[in-house]
Length: 116
Length: 112
Image 1 (tube, each protein chain N blue to C red):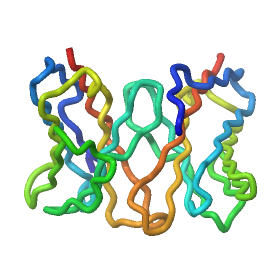
Image 2 (tube, one colour; image 1 turned 60 degrees about the horizontal axis):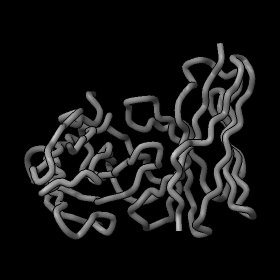
Image 3 (cartoon, rainbow over the protein chains, first blue to last red; image 1 turned 90 degrees about the vertical axis):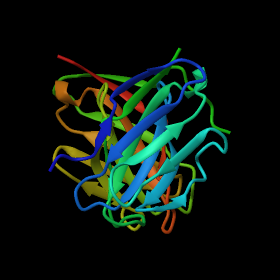
Image 4 (tube, helix red, strand yellow; image 1 turned 90 degrees about the horizontal axis):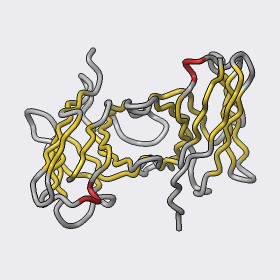
């Protein structure tokens, strides 16, 4: 059981480029969550997805950010035209089903984006 | 609104002593709470959880206390070890909500 796999672990982009972050959930998990962490801060919710569906994207900026979780393959968080303020650690978590108390999120090791 | 902290609250503790980490949560509707441990360069790792119908729960070397009256959560680590050095986050969620809300974090430094 490989756990939640994220790649790349580190990504460097210049302003204006695109960043794509990938997340493969734990085996048997069909729910994926993306969180962003700025230095020395807690994690901030961005988006919650199930296979082929975005369930809650209320924490995601309206512009430049998008997420998907296709039927086959990993979930992808895409940031277009990156700016320096996008520099952060992006964590993916997965769970077998939704709802509080029923399960605990398992987090990946994160993808650290640096925008030059 | 939330303030942005440049420095995490830090608890320095001698190896073998007990540690207590505190957390004030904001949402009185939250009914499930989790403590996570995050080591440098890694993702958050589940430590222990507690539901709102409990006020205490014990795990291996860890105890979580919940005081709903003052919306306060604490994590006690017994016989702290060097491997306990990390940032500890409390997180809260309410039933039917999708988002786990994290607190700001507390840095624990264990002195050998």
